Length: 180
Image (cartoon, rainbow, N blue to C red):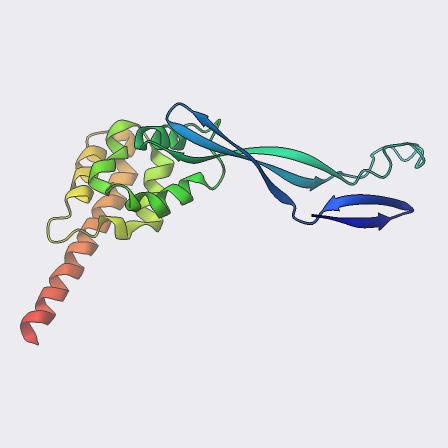
């Protein structure tokens, strides 16, 4: 659906929705959605440019955006690790949704690749993923893997602090159950 927009003597048809689904493409073990996003065209930098030129009324241009919509676990993790093709919010989307189709123990991203930014975000914002009392196997595995590498020292400390905190919370819960 389009609406007529008038500005500065120009009349144009502009889509009402700045983002339009365009096409889905299947590439091996992944499905990508392509959308067209309408972005404003910056005003001409050249003040001497005549305003009567045929392009003086152009206020928007379309930008094609390609996003991973679905894929195998391997493809999703590969996309997660590829900064060239990864969308800005993909790490958050992945960490928010992966539990619908796998577990932290199965995922074990930290064993596959050196993912400092992803693992740091996982520990900081999605620490509930590691709440698997009483043994916390995924978090213990992460701690063991990180401690084995000098370059992960700070991240290993962060994982250890989380493990101790979760163990203390579990201990407090069991103490409360005993006293109740």
